Image (cartoon, rainbow, N blue to C red):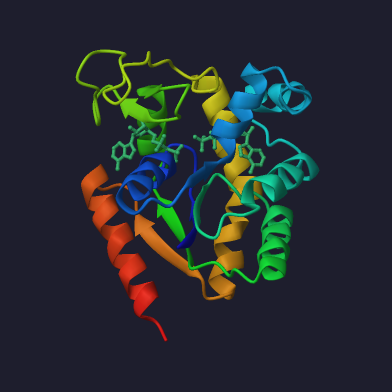
Amino acid sequence: MRLVLLGPPGAGKGTQAKILEERFGVPQISTGDILRGQVAAKTELGRQAKAFMDAGDLVPDDLIVAMMEGELRGKPSFVLDGFPRTVAQAEALDGMLQRLGLPLTSVLSIEANREALMRRLSGRWTNPRTGRTYHDEFNPPRLPRIDDEDGGPLVQRRDDTIDVVAERLATYDEKTAPLVGYYEKKGQLVRIDGLQPIDAVTQAVLSALGREAARP
Ligand code: ADP
Ligand code: ADP
């Protein structure tokens, strides 16, 4: 399985990627989680990425593509969460996968409206160690601010504030939304209604994967 999860911030990409990872053992590769790890570890990449992330802008393509070349090496299956985010990144990914002889299985576009995205992001709680997310209302942890899985503390991301979220949504519309058409033209796109509850979205994802697997 080699999947790309497309969708605006808050659509549920990370939530579904973690579910696929648990069910099928396919590793989730989340560029956001990797970048936050680099920022926390104060690496050179983290230093360069931080200001863009705090402003809700994209980190420059050359940095992301170099990082992903390393991440994809030696991984025959993966769920990409948050990459590609520009047409230039999508073209670079096509090139990498072509060289490796590993074409994408499919690209799932998880769709939701702005109102739902704002509600989801404003109530999101994240485990900074694992990237797992919860929601005050839609997916609460058993104990407040504690991860059910590893007992670690949950935090609100510094870019999940109203101002930065507005900027991230605008960045999505301008730079990432064109990828929907890009993959549709290549016949690789499946649209998923992301407004449904988490379990129903998972069912839609699994049935899309079943149909793709059955394709000649
Ligand atoms: P993304 O990775 O696309 O930014 P997340 O998976 O982190 O999105 O989800 C954003 C927030 O919305 C999280 O708090 C998550 O618990 C919640 N969430 C995810 N999917 C759904 C859903 N289908 N319905 C309601 N809330 C959801
Ligand atoms: P979301 O949960 O909103 O989908 P992510 O955790 O995927 O957010 O990304 C957080 C931030 O990391 C983005 O706002 C951006 O600054 C940076 N980022 C993540 N992935 C990419 C990418 N593929 N290209 C450029 N910047 C990225």
